[in-house]
Amino acid sequence: MSFFLEKLFNNQPLKVTMLGHSGVGKTSMLAAMYDQFDTISQDLQLQADQETESILDKRLQDLKSMVGDSIKSEEGLAGTAVDDPIFHRFQLGEIGAKPVLKIQFQDYPGGWIDTKNKDKDKIDKLEKVKTLIRESAAIVVPIDAARLMEKDGKYHNEYNKPDRINDLLKTVYENLDFPRLVILAPVKCEKYMQDDPSKLFKRVEEGYTEVLNRLNSEKLLPKVAVVITPVQTVGNIIFSRIEENEDDQPTFCYRRCSPDESYQPKDTEIPLKVLLSFLVKLHLDKKQNFWPNRILSIFSKNASLRNAVSRFSYGIGDKMEIVQGNHLLR
Ligand SMILES: Nc1nc2c(ncn2[C@@H]2O[C@H](COP(=O)(O)OP(=O)(O)O)[C@@H](O)[C@H]2O)c(=O)[nH]1
Ligand SMILES: [Mg+2]
Image (cartoon, rainbow, N blue to C red; front, side, top):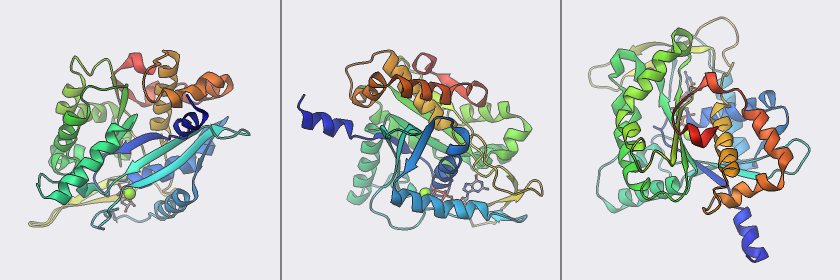
């Protein structure tokens, strides 16, 4: 391959698409992950580009200022008419060395997948989302845990939209050219992680039965790893109650669960750890003939990086559940 092409390919970021309702907490989750990274990692560093950093910083300030007994979740990107997905760009590498892996988290306005509407604009946007997923090594599905858990999951389907995700995967995960990782990430799950995490894991499986059945099919099972990784973005803010009005959307309220500072994130790095384990395993398995191999080649040239990544990802077993695809992860 020519030097130029090689350079072009090597410059490709590893893409990760986030598939969740606007306001579910996607940007917040990334903000906490980025903020906590240095505390958690010994040898690796993560650097956001300037634009990403300023978006995440702003979100972080909001997270740190969550106080009181009646915290209501507001919509995020929600109603704003955005025509393009937002790309959160990071570079990962060893501390003291040049960053070697570009990771791009892709976030699109939630409304883009909402609709079964057939007008041209809507169809175009849906196609854009499909392209984002198709090009991504992984998808992260942030799940509003309170909507999944409270009132027997009464508000889950309408908000988390597992059936829309199933529809999307139906067309995109077809004749897969390279293995993929699906990360189901319950957020706003502080209460359930304190109560009984196993209940939360079980409910995620129930709430996404159709998606999981699809991914578990004969053709996809060998190629798709699925994990559940609860993320406590704020840490000391828990679900308290639902305000229901007759004709309005319900409001989910949260409160601080102890007098300590509210911002004490937990497990924000687990999705990234799983993603990196997945990449290293692909590299070790020498899956040579597919596209992300160009990304994986960073590991062949660099044993020290490979070791740093393995150390970083070590021991996440009890913080997550592998639903399928053990062979793709360890
Ligand atoms: N209680 C609670 N609220 C959160 C959490 N994460 C985000 N939020 C709130 O949810 C709203 C939307 O968050 P945002 O990250 O912008 O959602 P996005 O649209 O999915 O990117 C904001 O008002 C946040 O303060 C969380 O872990 N717990
Ligand atoms: Mg957002």
